[in-house]
Image (cartoon, rainbow, N blue to C red; front, side, top):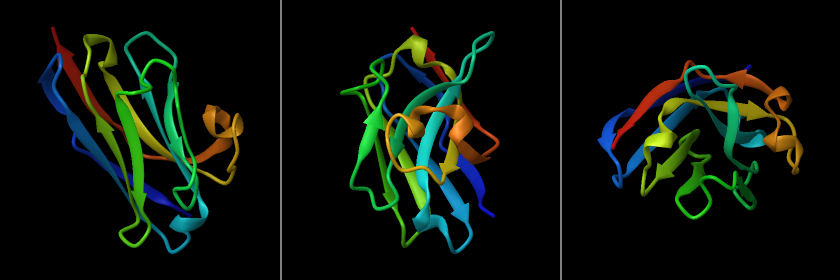
Length: 126
């Protein structure tokens, strides 16, 4: 069992940066790949970024490549999402999730994640 709690969301202007955190409980955190997904109003939840269990591999959606970075600290059982150069279209609820899968494209698929946080709102104004 893994419990996930996101934090760090908020309201920012376009071009600003935010860092989201996802604190995990459970001694098996380091055995999971971790991902961030987002869901805008009226849209499907979509993949944003993912990181392998040891941080050795990361994956990002084309829409955020070069702007968003995922990292993890297994000692702190926390995963981070650094978001730079934010755009209004990044506005969404951001969810962190844990997966037993470790390779692409599985870590990009919502159905491959068994544990989810409650989400944190990110709003980017123009």
